[in-house]
Length: 228
Length: 379
Image 1 (cartoon, each protein chain N blue to C red):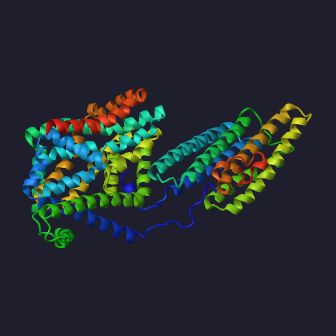
Image 2: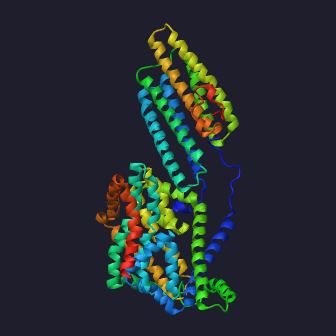
């Protein structure tokens, strides 16, 4: 433990916290891919359940670790310079933790007997899964590289996805097809929409000031960075 | 945007930092030499009168507490004591309780830091307990070791023998002139003395004394500030390690190393307060860091003894180290005693959280009124 004091390494501990945020996103993607595979690819919910729940616990543990380390950071560096970043990391860790929760919700669908792998619209559902999985990875890379321009691109892409998910949910609520068809899909699209929204929140940490974090998926009139 | 780094961080190159620290250490040692020479210039009568009032050990203890509370740094107090003992002005036996008092007085800084949480009950309870466990440990150590020292002289005896051994081994101590370092730190004193040549002894003494105290205070303040800035990342990493692995002896070593590096136990213990208040660091894990800080802070007095003329200066600095090590040896190994200061602090915090005036009263009473009244009555 004391050797840690003498070990050479990054002098800014926010770098380490940042990489832990990246790690959380990696875990969230793993959990999401596994959960989606149970609903869309016929994987056994029982077989992957343990992994999904263990991954979720790892995500939660990382979130708590990030929070603790942020408290230590502000206590050691009392100048206040890093306060916006500290608040942003707190918010971002919460958003990623929620992605883990939605992945668990998707797994819950399969656990309750939902299997869409043989349905006629499975290709569409899989394509959405692939886009979200890729977006998680892109968000992680963008976040770690602080690529603000890319963040704006992915926010625009995520906007399109939000509209598509809303459209799908609207169709399903007005559909006359049985509830065994509509409910699982509505829930699936709803979870996908929330995951997308949380990814947008992560990306807004690169594009918006602290007071505007986590509103990007809501009213589009709230998006002007300097609007009071 | 929320997450963005400054384009260019204003950073001093490592070599410049190193030069700065060496310069500040030199200034610190020169300050000790100025102080020592200033007291000597007053003449032995003035000096004897000055410390006659605190020949009572309890008065000496209270003087140590009060002086440290006033300058908010045990390092300044102990370095000054080393300088005074080194000049032969302050008797070694009188200095021992003062050094112990400095140990108690230094805890006021983190206790004051804990008052920042006074508006939020749970946070305050944790923060106040986290701060006062340091007070309780030091008071308990003094309560046991001061009477023992007065009866047997075991601490000062050990320190003197260790000092002699170090001098014989040529590591430290000895008379003036037998080390290039002592000659180097004497040079600015000689320069100032030449500049005010012809002035009365009292004027020369006052000038050197003020310069000495000022240089000690400023150099320590700058060393602490500079080192804290340079080592913030390492301090953070070390505390994070304590968070993930728990306390115990390794945490004690972390406290020791951190304090030696920043030359201030107040910095180490005050950093812990908001972390304890947030509930992130438990009292049980913070406690050994605090004990390590107690030992780490004694390095300043040891450094100060490098500039002093007499071997007693090294002996008093070693007494400080041995006092803190013995305190740990007394309370830490036995599981029944280990967390006694923590439990006492928790009880006090339980009371303080329901009656916050009592918390303020404790700080003023324990660190100002009791020492002040003690000095007046016992001198």
